[in-house]
Image 1: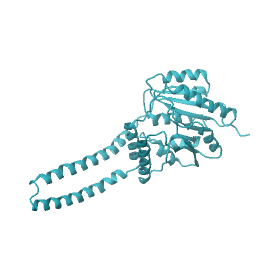
Image 2: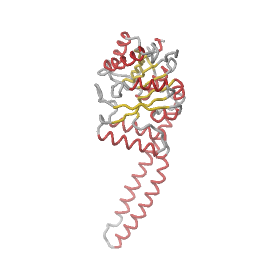
Image 3: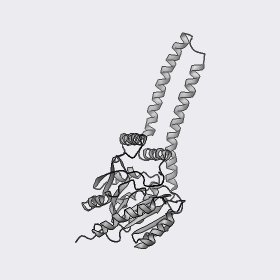
Length: 320
């Protein structure tokens, strides 16, 4: 008989006290059913990663640990961010698990896709992506910007799975390979496809958030997109050369236009050339400096070699 494999479902949490009881209930039912059906080992776990929450998230996790053997948690010393919470969960769970699934706590990702992912794993897939087959719950703005982002990343040469976020299954060897990537500027949606190994997709419909507030407002979404672009491509730096050539070309045209207008006496002496110089060249310089600065900032962050996260409490490892 095939020996059941240990599954750990990793759930990053930041101020999720409003949704956590329902998350534990629904994920617990799915896990218990898979254990009863012998799809996963009976010591499989749900691992909650408290990313420095300021509410009662950690106390709730500890409460559920007392009620259910399959619930465990780790607590950060402060807020390190969603991507680091995912990596911390994977780093902790890989020592004990055969497969790991990452899913957000807000219940927008369909938990009924979890058994399908496990089935794909047993069919020999090391990575199983949860892919949204619709974005009806998103605003029109978010849907449009998401499509633009995926299209831009593709043109920049970044291999991503469209409409796939951080809801995925990874085998032990896939996670071990992913953890060999040591960069601090994490963009897992671009990193996981680089791991290789056999992969598959499971499609699902995204739901409304059960409770609480989104942890990705517009400001964070823009930062996340910029991190993805600058962490995986040097194309923006190369575009600066093209931008410079373009500005020079525009400058030549404007000079010709200004000369013609001057011949007809339609301009104030010195005004056009001054405005062209200040606004066009000043704007281009600011753009170029900011793009280069973004890359220098990431280099600065990487060379310091600081830890991605600090775990204050680890209740997960104690259960094995």
